Image (cartoon, rainbow, N blue to C red):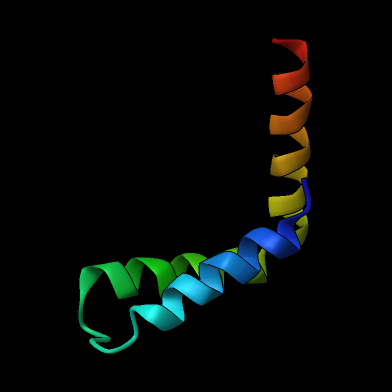
Length: 57
């Protein structure tokens, strides 16, 4: 699983919610997107580990 498509979907959801930038849903999506984008390599490592664990189960 690659991080880019997940971030793209998160960004799409963020844009759909941006009508009210004080709403908790928008804020959660916005800050999650920003943080994960900033920590892209760590996010990809996390996804790789999740995928490895899923294959074990």
